[in-house]
Image (cartoon, rainbow, N blue to C red; front, side, top):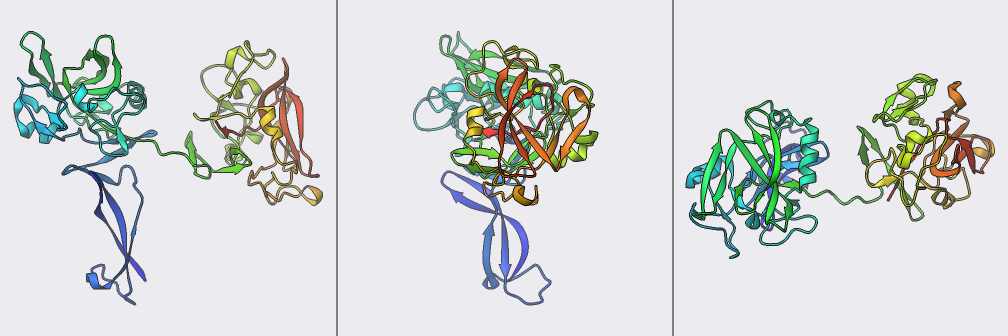
Amino acid sequence: MKAIFICLFVVALGAASYSQDMILHKHITGAVNDTVEIAYIDSITFLPFRCGYSRVYYSGTFYNTVQIGSQCWLKENLNIGTMIYYDDWSKNNSVIEKFCYNDIEANCAVYGGLYQWSEAMQWTVPSGRAQGICPADWHIPNYSEFQTLTGQVSGNGNNLIATGTNISGFSALLAGYGEIDFITGQLGYYGIGNNTSFWSTTWNSANWEAARISLGSYGSINSNYLSTDNAFSVRCVKDAEEFVCGDNLVYGGVTYHTVTIGSQCWMKENLNVGTMVAVGKDQTNNGTIEKYCYNGLESNCTTYGAFYQWAEAVQYLNGATNTTSPSPSFSGNVKGICPTGWHLPTLMELQAFPSSSNALKAVGQGSGGGAGTNTSGFTALLAGYREYNGAGYTGLTGRSIMLSSTESSSGNARQLDLNSTDDVFTLSSWQKTFGFSARCLKD
């Protein structure tokens, strides 16, 4: 069997379809030509959706996709529905209705449709994620999701506009908008070539206004609440995939594997996030995550993960420092330097581990009675640690100490302590000013 080529193929998925990569396999020995009769096709392998590569086929139109940070967006405005005219209103009649700039259908084909807010929401009041007129597995963004998007381009609208730098690939066209005249009850069209506005699901029920984001030809990004009777463009963002423990997690440019231990879901690697600082420098509350790397080598952070002082790890929550307790005391999960949806373990969560430290250590870590078996899948490396007061680094291949969010006093916190010589771990108390490894577990 020979894999011969990759192409695009439309796979029907109800109202929406994905233009999906596929690999065709054939049984022709020694063949070098990539053209083959259908009769010789032995099997077809469909590849999963890949943002930026796969397209979405929805109601007769192909939409390209683009990955921007953690979000996957359609690259074109929606153009779905039946055109109505400036003197009409969208109605809850089971027909998607759109306006086209200047009532010209060709403008919809280029710039996408313009939709009144209730029509875009499909006449439901959003509560959480709202699919609205988007295809299945996609939704109309809320205002916070637009903030995430604009944060990825540092608030520079030119990075989102097709006629600007468009370094994001968002490829916004300056499609104009429709504004309602409350005296005549008719729609006027404005701004094509100069600006564009997108609806969000976020709304003010008291005034029947919804939040929109607008992009201008000079790179401006503005947002405000306007009447839901206006007609704006709609862009769709892909629903986030539901995380299943065992899936990989990408955070700060690093891929982390995950594993279930008992009822807990853990990262299989120590955190390596932040900017490296010198061993003799205390980490500070300066808005930047700071880390130590064994012997000041980034390569050691890559292999073993980074070290963090306790206050840096909890991100100074509730005024916490390395010498004072948080006020009020922590309650619930402490995210700290972990990714969203993950947190630093508490002492109680560490106590749920199997009693064998060898079961936590990676194979090849430790020796004799302390040789790792990794039967838990935790895959701990004996990464060493940063010494008190920045005197240096010690313990590589001999010891690993991992942070918890639980204090034992104002200047000390509880940690998971593994060593290379025995099968026992301790939950000891160390001064917060040391630099230790950090692992995160799922909320």
